[in-house]
Image 1 (spheres, rainbow, N blue to C red):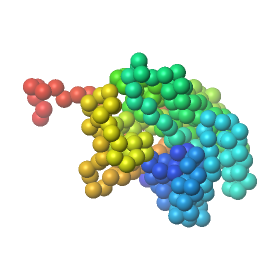
Image 2: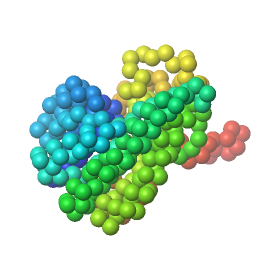
Image 3: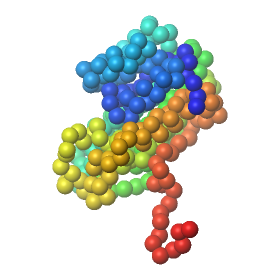
Image 4: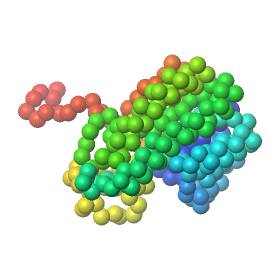
Length: 265
């Protein structure tokens, strides 16, 4: 597994869920990590728990001035940015007819505009450091179509295009940009969007109702660790030849389908 010794990383949406596990993984592998989130109390508490190599910064990914403040702070404290993980996201599950303009734009602002502004904000710092790695957390909903996620899915499709175009422009500066696409219905990833014991009866897809339920596994973070391990690989120097592509961590969800009645081995 790739080490991140002396690397400085910003992980957005790091106060909980996938972002928190990625931050913890990076710290364990020797990085200094900025946990960036709008959830100030929760994020600051986690940073204190993780130790002196972790810092919390309040960040609204939709605002360029918020990004500028965070990057300036990181430059002052740790000399620059080597890694950016654009993980912050919002999820909206509703039919096409029940998705308003505001619902759609909220997904686009956080899930697509946010990573764009983040890439813009860190590019200069990474150039001065001699290169870097940017990992945009996508989704399998950005690889295939599905009902009920028109706003969220569209934003994740857009994030893939952002990664590829940015990789083409920034490659000359040794800055790599990739998209990590986890399983969209992973209940451990969905949990932050549905805290407590939510009523899922109005979710417009019976399969989604099932996979959004709390995980039954005793080791509920195991799926998140798989995602974090891929993020670690993409952030590390072991992936120097990887840029402008999608890396899928979905337990085979998008590989195909089992057809009943045919040989299964």
